[in-house]
Length: 161
Image (cartoon, rainbow, N blue to C red; front, top):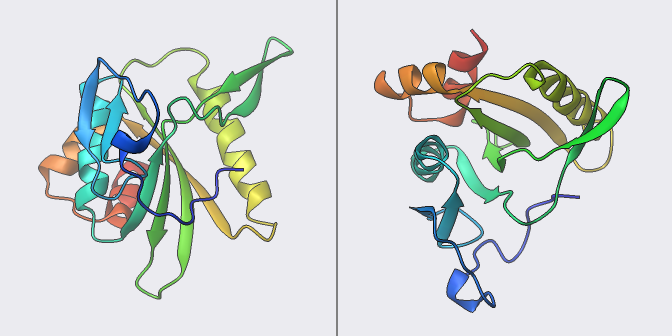
């Protein structure tokens, strides 16, 4: 269960064999001070999360194994959302978000998105609080960031429209 809690900050230098030869973002609000990213889009999103006023902390779902099951051609498959984000609203209420960044759209993306949304709905009925899903398609994400979006809430609203 990907519940973010204490410690809120881990120094990746203390993690045994933290090795990543790809793109790194500076993790100011992340579980590690270096955030492993597979693409410039993931780095851009991590940088946004670090600067977003309402983001308390986030986890890059890299090598943690958290997945959501979806079905493609009646066969179970695993979807690994890119980020898990804790957002605090203006009212002080916290919401956990599964967040997926996507540049290239493939045919199974709607299946993954639907499963992630359903997972969040089910989790929201448990003792683990409110859960939501954010799908950040590259063109929409970059457009919102160019317009100066500086909170997760405004980004979520921009991406939903």
